[in-house]
Length: 158
Length: 239
Image: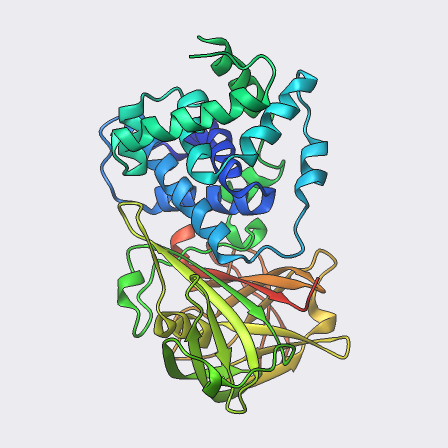
């Protein structure tokens, strides 16, 4: 499949950022992770079977980059979480609460929840992207949901 | 779609990359890129980086964290590293969290550094101390010395305070036959750090200062991403 970098950028850059922010909880680190992923894509000679393949690959690289950025603790002189969150425009006031609660989840639950709820992936697909067993994904999804259910008004049983 | 998904998607759709991010990616990275790296070359001693993307970070610790190397456990690697225009014999300790801490001959901490290699399949590995040193030794450095910005590259050193433009950009070329990537763009220069891109060729229309003479030389070149080796983020001082 031919890579059209600009098209891929327009389509996925913000989605990659949402995934990266879910992990980093920090704007600059999340953008760095997205930049890493996009440049890796730009540079890669890898043959992609489909656009879906590209999306999954980009998400995987972004997630890995975000985890590594976070692990390295180079977070200095960066915008604070509160400051950044206050700058976001949410459609509903309760959306801010939802984001806060999601981002307060343990990281291993957060990214699984994000790929399920935001990217609309099936648990098997999430397992492939994150290189986890499907059972692990299901368990993390279940645990994440339980926590959100206990914290959020209107979070429905599934 | 269930309500939870709907709600979640609405919420996280509030997140957007910053306005200038697209330019940083789409335009030549020396113009607007920040802090991250493209490494498309094989640097002496780190050939496995050749087909990958790499990132390097360093934090200058100065002597703030004095600690004697001999008291530390863990994996130690002894390396030659250019620091402030001087080739130093340093001990590099693996901190165990993906970062390394550099101790000079006197046991004082000098820098913390870390780096990642993203392979073609998207997997990432931590750079070894030797790999990081390979980057560091081919990189330029900028230090704030009593309010003056001192540029150094290996054994060269120059006060470049007045050469930094109002947007915090500095373009410098050094002559070094041993290094293929000698066109440096330092940017986002603040009191707390800076980022660097190292290129094989000058960027189109950019004005590079020659390191030896600080003469202004207007050079023209292309700015294709492939011409860029990597960039480094350096953070200095404390919050």
